[in-house]
Length: 450
Image (cartoon, rainbow, N blue to C red; front, side, top):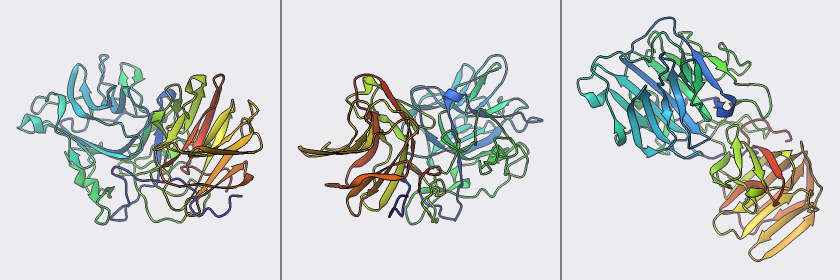
């Protein structure tokens, strides 16, 4: 058991994330892995309004530097029609050979939830008003490339053709698969709406937060909450909660318990909730491994919760988490060892590098817990661990201590920390040969030990 850790999750907020001002809470997100070719699909029975519609949703990225579609359609003729991110991490709205919008800004924060809105209204007399993109409540107005559709033209989207979420289609092949998390996705058929229909500003924090949509969805409109994770079917995980019954079919998505479960409580709302410490119950924006703070040879996957390290990762610490440890409170997370190979995992100071604390396996004869602070070091013998073992880390920032657990039993004593500022969880490979791999759980799913 893990004693004295009232807050046994690692939770943080950034960018647009905060509490829900009007009481509207998002319960779950859906994780998409490009390597799994995961996406949702739906073919409308008939065409809706192809001149005017709105797509809106919350997006948390995992992988960067690749074309990734949030919303797509199989328009036929071997053309591509994605809305999402291009390989330069710019927002990108494309029809075939025409790039309607390529933003000047790039979107590379993998710790944050972005609220993104795309509106189409080709009935507008002013050409530049026919396509609008909003990020976190603000309209995107700077573009590296901008082209406008003709007035009153019908575009391919919202036709009676295969539509996708989390990928695009070219011909009969899905591609541009998204890696990250999506939550609270809306499609409004027949209206071009701005972010105020889906979000509001929290009067206390000043942050943008979701609110319940109260308007009409139109015939082909839908709302995906991803709230029912009892099965990976169109009537559960892909259920449309708008009342229209426009459900989506999950492709290569899983709700099986464990590390492969793509249904998580990592969401853009931090509501007042009861935390019993078991993990996977408190909604909020959780830490993952950070693709912008890792060794070049470290590979992240599964929503950046899985990490693998090769000998080329050494001597870098492998990968850091996206969110710093708060300087107060008690915090707990778990690292599942999938490839032991001289793995080390712990916390480190990312600003001055003067303190790191880690638990290292014994593949090279180093069964120890090591404390490094300033120029002094100390170590203590500890039990070795191997594939399948779960390493628990409990940090008491109020008492400046850290304790280690292997499969629920404490290893060694409770160790003192010289300071608790600028600390992040990390994992890596402590050798010039071989490899190591882990799966992190910062509380976005149930802990193995509580």
